[in-house]
Amino acid sequence: MQIAEFSVATGLGGGLLIGLAAALLIVANGNIAGISGIAGTLLRKWDGSTVWRLLFVIGLLAGGVLVPWVSGTPLTMTVDVPTPLLMLAGLLVGFGTRLGSGCTSGHGVCGLARLSPRSLVATATFMLCAAVTVYVVRHVAGA
Amino acid sequence: MMQTIAKTRIAALVSGLLFGAGLVISGMVDPLRVLGFLDVTGTWDPTLAFVMGGALLVTLPTFQALGRLTKPLFAEKFALPTRRDIDARLVGGAALFGVGWGLVGLCPGPALVVLSTLQAPAFLFVGCMVAGMLLYQFTME
Image 1: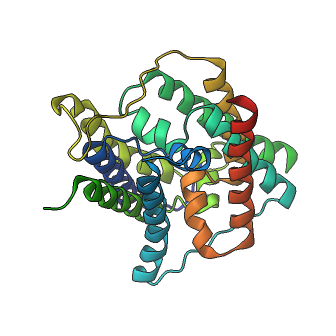
Image 2: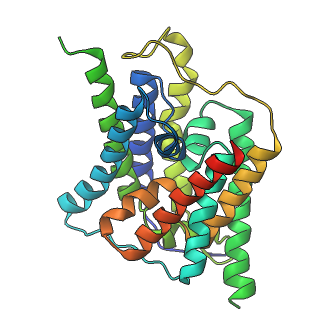
């Protein structure tokens, strides 16, 4: 098996920050830091929770701007997927996370920590389906 | 004395900030790194496992000790999911999300963060993700 070049320090350090973010939101405000739920609810109804949801999203975007600015390493993104597939993927991610009540953050980072059976099943399912998809795209269709 | 509502708003902003910073520092905003983790038969990139592990290192003890608090610091009660049943929507939704995630390597958090690159594919992806969320609302709720 071939292993790509990677950094334990930045992976683990970034993960700790994500964990701290989720811990802060539940301890301070009693809310789950699930991105698809926070964003999806903003699209659904505006109520007393709208302001904190918006501020969370603004913070998320600001974090993504501040770190590259401070570190001097600009954020780049490489996507080598044909446009129709990119669009299909976006639709599936949006629809699927709402139907399945969560994504990598809500089910993965928070749900697993709560030992929720639903989150365990959801996380195993999206991990497996994502791995199978990558296998098909890279090693079956792309071969 | 600061009002409680202001405290919840500051906490949400700081939480989002930490989350976004963590996603960038961990490299999870790079779709190729995520696809590298999912590509278990190719050149495997273990980064995502360390990111998830690092996050759980904090969230696991936090959520397990949550019962010791009668209520959150700045709110009246915890908004925690109570369902424990496994239904078709949960599994089907997770499966659809997984396929979309595997196609590009972006899940909702990183997708929002990469908007700051101002690159067209980021906006196209997030636009379609929002459309998918709205489609769910109008057809399945």
